[in-house]
Length: 99
Image (cartoon, rainbow, N blue to C red; front, side):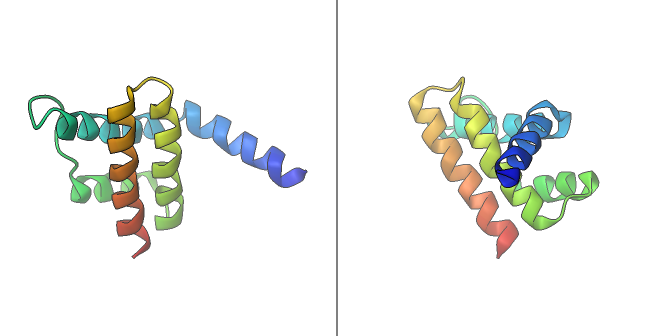
């Protein structure tokens, strides 16, 4: 039970964290870029993301978990195609961080 409550607390903190919102934005606009064949949004820059997460002081595991959480936040407002592309982008980031 404590693990569940702890998880809810972490999720709530992440939802309100301005740095988490940056991740959501980066993944979302990258998904838009791919879905629009480059006509909108911008491509995902993994090196830029690494710099950003390093500046936040996050270890690779926390950053990877935050990418996954970002997708759950994107699901709330994105259309189906963008959501599915966002999942792919987050998976790429997740794998890069845990490689």
